[in-house]
Length: 175
Image (cartoon, rainbow, N blue to C red; front, side, top):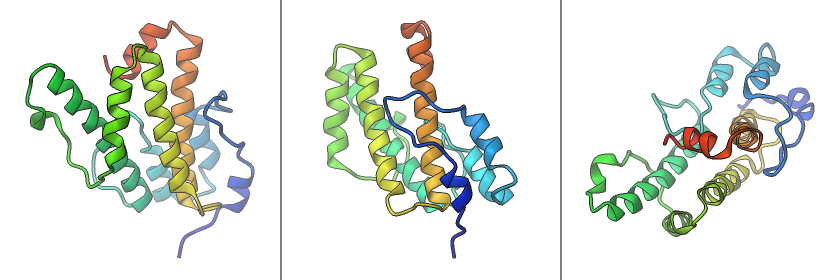
């Protein structure tokens, strides 16, 4: 039976894709510390939007997120490989997520002349997927997992807004 964190979640501010993050990811983890079990806190602490997913996830929601994000990144790899006339198989990562729309999204983002707008398109899709993951999960760990990832997305965009945009974007996308 899942645990519910009614008071913790009710006290968290709502997140909106175009808004500033209310606090940092690190502050979020500190808020959760002592209010959720250590194993679940560790799971939340492993939240990432960088694509460097290591180890086995103990949460089906976290696993779904990782599979979705990996599938999206794989679609981008395929497009870049074709453009460079290389075989993409050596660069693809294992995933169990299949969605035909991801190929279209990746192609649209790749064709966008603005790298910033292309990244915004991709992150809006990620945000939408996190919304779907948290649907029906109002006060449980699944909600916190989606919240943590959304917070990381907002934190990334806040860095872009507040800094030298080309430099920060290159760092954020690993370029």
